Image (tube, rainbow, N blue to C red):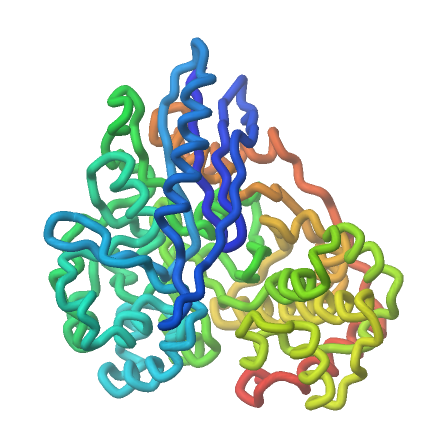
Length: 483
C-alpha cells in the first residue's frame, strides 16, 4: 500500500504525519510532533529554521524506519505564509528568517504605496497590502547586508524541500500569499518586483503548481519529494469536504481565513479596499479571502494564564453570559503577543464595552467576537464576488471548538460543517496521492475526505440576541469596515 508523509509546520507546532489510502478512505496517523519556538534576538524576532529542520528530519527518519513492506510514495511540506529564507550563491542559508510579527515592517505599507499605485499592485497580484507580507518584509530589508549578498529567495516550505531534495522551486500557493506573484499568469510579478526596488535575482527558482515533483529524498532516492499546496491554508481548503452547491470556508487556527473558492480573481477597487486577497489554490482556483486574527487571541491569553487545557477554558466560556463583551479581533493593539488579557481589557475600556470579569468571560468575549467577524467577512466576500454560500465549512483547529462552531452558525444563520481538524495535513497527503496517480481530481480528493472524516453539523439558532449583538459589533469596527 502506498504511504505518504506530510510535514505540517504551524506557528506553534510542527508535525510529521503518515497517510495511506485504503479503499477510498484515508488513514492518518501522527508520527512526530514538535514545538516551534520563535527566537527573540536583540535586533528582532526570528524563526529557528535549523531547529525546525532537525525536528522534521527526526520525524521523517522515524516514519521511514517503520515503513515495513509499505512503499513510501512521497513527502510533502506545508507551512504558514509570507516568511522566507535568503540563500547565497552556493545555496547556503544567510541568517535565520525574520518572523512576520516583527515590528520592523510597520512603515513598509506606506513605502509600498509610494512606489507602486495600490490599485495597480492589487490588479497585478490580487493581494491585500499588509505589514506581514513578503513584499513588506523585503522593503523593510532595503540596505541590509543580507539582502546585498543574497542570490535566491526561498519560501519556507520550499526551503525545507530544498534541504530534503537538493532542488529549489517556488510553489504557487505559498508564493501568492506574499504579494509578489502575478494572479493571472501565476509567475513572478516582475514589474512589481522592479518597482519596489527588490533585487530581481532573488526570484530565479521555477514557479510550479501543487502536485509537481521537486526531486527525490537525498537520504533515499526511492522516495519522491512533492510540492504540495505549500501554503497551509491552501492545503486546508483543498481538504474542505464540500460536495455540490456553493459554500464558504473558514480555515480557523492562529488566523481566521474566511472566504470563497472561486474560478477567477475579484480585482475590483471595492475588494482591495475591503482587504480581500485572491490567493492561488489547487487546480487554478482562487481563494478569495480575508486574513483575520483568529485563535491567536485565545492562545496568547492561555499562555498568560500558565497554559491551562483549551477544553477547560472553552467549557467555562460556555457557561458565561453571551455577547456581554465584544471587540474587533483585528484591532491593531492586539497584534503584539505580550499580555493579551490586559490588551483585551484595555480595548474593552476604550470602546465602552464591559471588561470581562474572569477567564471564562474573557474567552467568551474572544469567541463571540470571532463569530461576529466570521459573519462580517463571509457576507462581505459574497457581496464582492456576487455569489452566495449556502453552507459554511470550518476546518483546522477551530473545528474542534464546538462553542465557536455553534456561534458561527448562529451569527451567519447557516449550517456549519466542522472538520477535519487536521485539514492542512489531510490536504497535503491527498495532493500527494493525486500527484502519484492514486486520485484523479480535486473532487475525488474531497470525496475521500467526506468518506474518511465526516464533518460535524451545527444548525443555526438565530435570535434577536444574535442580531442585536452583531449590530453592536459593527459599531466597533473602523468606519471603512462598517460599509
